[in-house]
Image 1 (cartoon, each protein chain N blue to C red):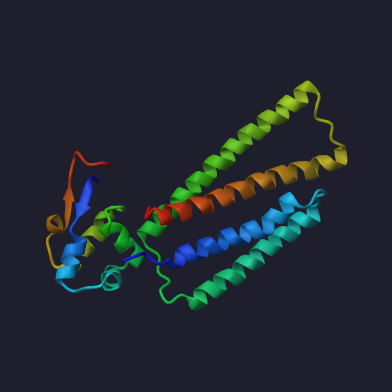
Image 2 (image 1 turned 60 degrees about the vertical axis):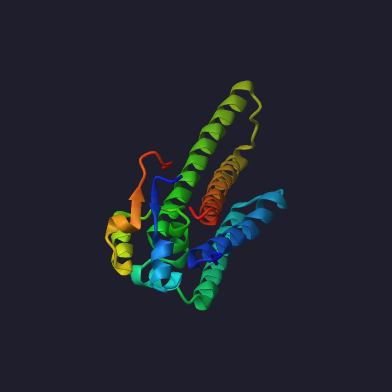
Length: 142
Length: 71
């Protein structure tokens, strides 16, 4: 019998859709980022996630989670952690390199926003990796 | 060949039990039962005991360990 989507899988697809819908335009369409846009995006993702989770919960008859769900969740967090740790090392390495060769010329008032944007981008990539890893684990039956 | 194989599908069919019924009685999702039947997921010892109890067989009749199998 072909496995249908479990409650956890549905919530993961919804999370991935929400992440791509909110983060995609932010990183690919906006050229000038600001603190307000970052704050607005965080609020948007929280609101969208709550709405999607409520809709899925309302239409899901069986909402139990079990040991396999927890194992898959841990795998997702491990993948997300590896991604963010790698990005941090690469990012700091690039920062050091550009500073060393004198390429880093940011206006002082823009430094904070620049770093906020970079670190937020790392968090977003790690979060999407976590969700995608969990979806792949479910599709492969683990 | 997986290291832990099981006879869940055969034992369940013999008792005319659906995957959902087994899942409900063991306390897991139907997707987990499907993954176990396909030998893609090895359950915890606690879940393995529960499955064996629900199917009314000793644990070693339900699950078998092959040391040469892939973990």
